[in-house]
Length: 280
Image (cartoon, rainbow, N blue to C red; front, side, top):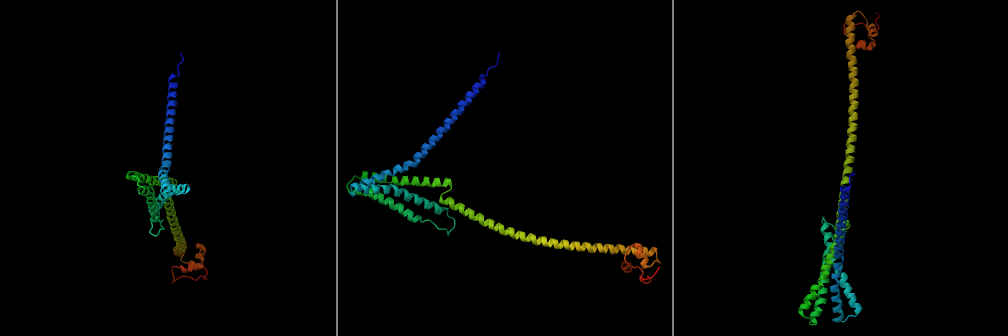
């Protein structure tokens, strides 16, 4: 009876199903994350359309602007709010990244004043005109609150833009920090190069002194060798003179294979020695 492959086939089927479910779960997470990111990116822009429409309506009906001028005012409300808030946050974060007192700072105060002026203008146009026209107070308050949606949307857009730059390392604060670190590393490298040159100079001086010491040692060894030779010659001459008391210096010099001057300088008996020219 042949063995069946039923367990093996079942395990393969289970593994394939598990892999498929894992891929489906990963796809779901990716789609969900993409959807949230798209909503977070574009919903603030939609929020600014509300105060833009209120501005268009009030300038057209209360101030009797031409339609195209009212549309320009609405577009200005749409764009200037995002620009003012984005610039203010960018300047604030850049100034906070500075560590030295002498660093040139961005005009954060001017940007903040511009953002506040934008909010004041939008509130006056979208609420003041309605209040002057006799619109109920509740409607005026609602219009004012809805006008602040432009501020909320601009804040979200500005923060996301700054965060995107931070993730890529292109935001001003990160760039400034990287530049500061690069300058610090360059300064340390210059210091290390200076110390290396000083160390090399010291090593050269030590090598010169070592060569001088080696020269002195060589000279000392030479003198020591000469001294040992002279001491050995003195002992040999003394022993030969005692062995051959009647031999002349010339004869002993030939026997010992020394110079006559060496034999004469180490002759042990100054009172009874013979001269170098004396014959045996």
